[in-house]
Length: 443
Image (cartoon, rainbow, N blue to C red; front, side, top):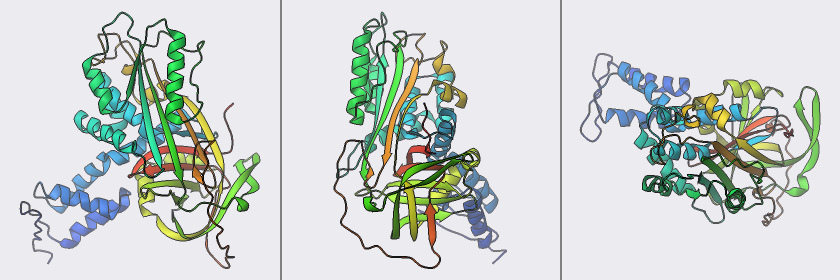
């Protein structure tokens, strides 16, 4: 069959020619490996492309490369890793919501034009046109806000505008905010106390907590355009840990520091997902009542290799490892922890390439006339892992019934997270939270 042409029909409107069927399959599997993509995803790309045109195996290779580079999910995953590295030291506990921020940036892009818009899109959605980006993230904002039987994943976005003697908020800006379910607050430039109180109240309502971002003394009345995003997660484990098995153990923070942490443990039979490669072990813990919601922990095989892992890990490889996870029997030990962060993201975003938006050269025609620029991008995050799941500090949930403990003997998979690790939470194949834990807190 080497000299024969292979004809495949999809919807009756395309033909693929190849000297060898093996040539086509070799291309597909090669790209699965090199680009860290699942076979299902490669097949989707193949049929999507072939439905549009006639191609050869050589052309297919080119377009597989192109599509592998340009998937929103892989670009978003890469953005998430770069953002975390730019915003937080790997030796400190940190958590942020890259999806919440991407939704914020998408709204900002929708209000912008010219170089301002180009720079914003290049950072978190390079290669996609403006309409596609805005439609994608506005739909995500609407979908994620829906609670599912007590499981709540809710990003929030507040646009604070101090227009002073400028015209009122334009209809275009109001329409954009509605598309993203964002709130707009407009204040008199000198009404500092009221501004501070309303922003803090909005944050408290969004996160179901007593978060306070500002006090009157630190809020700058010269901030004319401020973006505040929040993220709230309330979800129980599908397989909760037994509190009676949580004990104090050593955690190796770095070469010179060993601390004591509360380590949750479980002998998990056919409950958790797992994969590994030469650098990391990956454990996937499902949440209850939402089959698309998972916590994935990326544990370096070497105790103090998190920094090098973060430097080398790409979004494509991260998604590949997640896609490769399979349900296994595994012995698990993972710390119980709570992280709270307040990120001012102007500098991290500028280091990634968003520069014009923070300067007097910014172009935001949907907001007002010339001179309006982003004064501050702020994200407030709190994330807790305990025996029950991920909840606000003061929430209460029932504990599971007693489970039979079984003593394992012989060889088995061990996932002992007793040194710094990376973690992500995914929903609907999107990275909604990313962070790292080292047992050390910023001061």
